[in-house]
Amino acid sequence: MHNLALALHRRGAQVTGSDDEIFEPAKSRLDAAGLLPAQEGWDAASIAPDLDAVIVGMHARPDNPELLRAQALGLKIYSFPEYIYEASRDKQRIVIGGSHGKTSITACILHVLRYHGRKFDYAVGAQLAGFDLMVQLTDDAPIIIIEGDEYLSSPVDRRPKFHLYQHHIGVISGISWDHINVFPTEENYREQFRIFADMTPKAGVLIYDKDDEQTQLIAVPSNPDVTYVGYGPHEHVIRDGRTFLLNKRDEEVAIQVFGEHNLRNISAAKEVCKQLGIKGKDFFKAIASFPGAARRLELLKESATSVVYKDFAHAPSKLKATATALKKQFPKRRLVACLELHTFSSLNPAFLPQYAHCFDAPDVAVVYFNPHVLEHKRLPPLAAATVAEAFQRPDIKVITDSAELAAFLREQEWANANLLLMSSGTFDGLDLTALATEIAG
Image: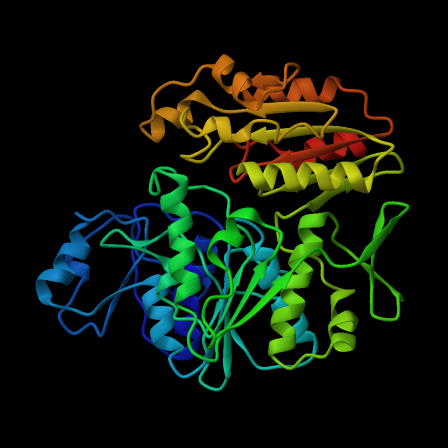
């Protein structure tokens, strides 16, 4: 939301906003632009009758006093995706959906387009190298690349965000049940992607992972007016801890990312870029310098015998893909991997069995969660034994104290070993950079 505020401010709009808590880097960035509220909290008086529109984020609740005031005044109220659509009505809209990989695919497309000097707008869910904002809205860009989240649009609009963008080109990178607090069954969750696929318009394009079983159920070519494009992992070789793509002439192109999931992401991005007029040879020129998205297999520290990576992985499919990728990239090194359970789904006993055998790749597997997070999310207590049983790995270690976790990791033998830290949280403020320096310094 703060990125949208900055993008609109940059476009020349008068923007005001509010929140009950504002964290870094949003706080400093808003302050530098003169958009930081004088005080935190909600105040109905902030909503004046002369406002052109109010944009509400998912953090607000339905009884938010400012939202109620806007409704009482009959003001135009947008959710984030509704506003992005309104701002891009006259543009070609490319929407990247999927349970996993959508940020990386979006980031890859943006990198290639920028490399070749193309004009484009965008809305992406992570900070990307070389981009100062996560949202850009201009008057002259003919296309917009949107990361299409399947989560709810706003507290008063229960539709998935990616249903509101009305894509011309859509991508489904894979479907793996998530957000159990919103989509209580796997079928209900998959249905949201079926709706997205069916929204592909006449002369539109749907690009999908042809090997994903759940995606196959909803992305089958069923509309003769739509072009369906299936993709798999890009052809490649791995040598000495580096991954090389193979082009049509079997020439090698060294890349900075690795893992089968990223090779699939690159294939998806290549298919999108092809639809946008980027030739294969030009795609390969650009992809060599693609650094990946922030917090997606992000290198923290490297030595001659160890590497430490952090990753946003938290859902079962992401966990399995990321851990397997690092093990395959360094097959002769021992892998210690740690997952933090932090989301509503991952801390729900009904969802935990989805993690069965998803953490088999590491030599040492650790699962961490903080019982206080359960209290904050108003979830029932979770026993460490319940977590251990769900992963179906007898030697898995479950830790519930961050100091104990740090001590356990420091005790490991790090000669010829790698560390992988996976979470959508922060391991309760653990200084991962300092820890990585101790391990691989």
